[in-house]
Amino acid sequence: MTEALTPSRAAAPCRSAADLPAPPALPIYLDYAATTPVDPRVAQKMLVYMTEKFGNPASTSHAFGQDAAFAVERARTQVAALIGARAGDIVWTSGATESNNLAIKGAAHANRAKGRHLVTVATEHKAVLDTMRRLEGEGYEVTYLQPQANGLVDPAAFEAALRPDTILASVMLVNNEIGVIQPVAALGRICRARGILLHADAAQAAGKMPVDVEQLQVDLLSMSAHKLYGPKGIGALYVRNDPQVRLEAQMDGGGHEKGLRSGTLPSHQIVGMGEACELARLELAGETTRIAALQERLRSGLAALPGVRFNGDMAQRIPHNVNVSFTGAGAGALADKLPGIAVSAGSACNSASAAPSYVLRAIGLSDAQARNAMRISLGRYTGAADVDYLLRQLRLALR
Image 1 (cartoon, rainbow, N blue to C red):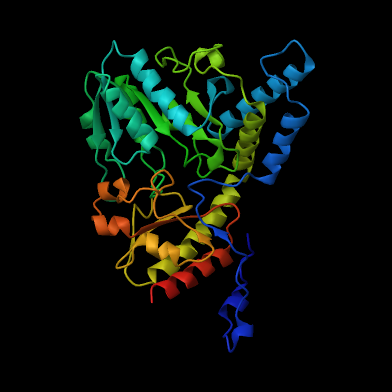
Image 2: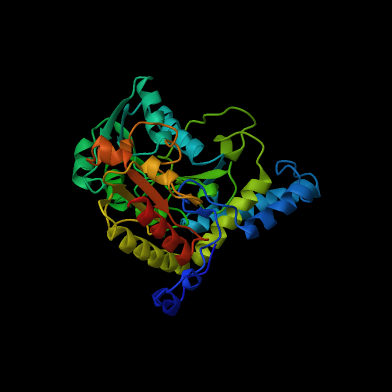
């Protein structure tokens, strides 16, 4: 959104208002964990498949459908490349919520003869937790692991929770509220050795950190385009190509996506997700370095403020997320004192609730600490001047 201030200008003494650096253009968006804007390069690709190559990809008897079908398969290859998968292992969905539902319910229903025990973590996204609770109503038993104080799952505790009748575990790769990276590879090795399916919600990880499904040893992995500069309403589920990885479809219809997800494919949205994944893959290394520098700038500035507590492990995390609690200042009220700055007083799915964050409560914060928390998430269009403006406004608000 804005360019970084040069070191010389940032360090110059200010003798009058005229000497102050110009504020960045408002509003400032620092809520990238909730959603991201569609990259203009992505939107440009999508437009062609809305206005010119608009055919139904299932109608391959003519050129319009053939063009759309080719674009869908090309995008499938692009999504697979981002996570080290094969194109044939990618199933299109409407987003990570549907991917989570298909993975968890689909695996539970397809494997009910083997057992009815599932394992997950108390800090998972509601799309996982509510799906698990729905299965509990169907007679399944779910173990909800409590994370450590740093937000991370203890692999030993995870292994101890597994039983002979455990058929599936679901652990998110990156937490949506506190940004910690779970030790999914270690959990994958445990599950693979015991023949238990492992699902990972990677909505907050894909495009922000290297993701390799083979290295992680996951059987199922969920993604959403709108978290990585693609359009809303489209996502994907990685399904490992193995006879042991069986899912029961949750939607009936025309048998699209190898019978796992019926419905006419939205080729323009799929093209958008493919392009977004391609850009993320090509630009990941440079963007990670840039965002990490911004995170350090932000953390240093926040640490100098009174009554600040950082939430979540400080090392094993993505650089895009900073979650802090402010002593004596309600996060919602504090956010109201930040004119023109978009931050989150909680995750997007919980921001309408007055209840304290269940994620923060699960890692040991009091109700007051959880209510006084703020999530600041950085992204592709964040500049150093945006971070500096936020810090200045926070200093004023906390006086």
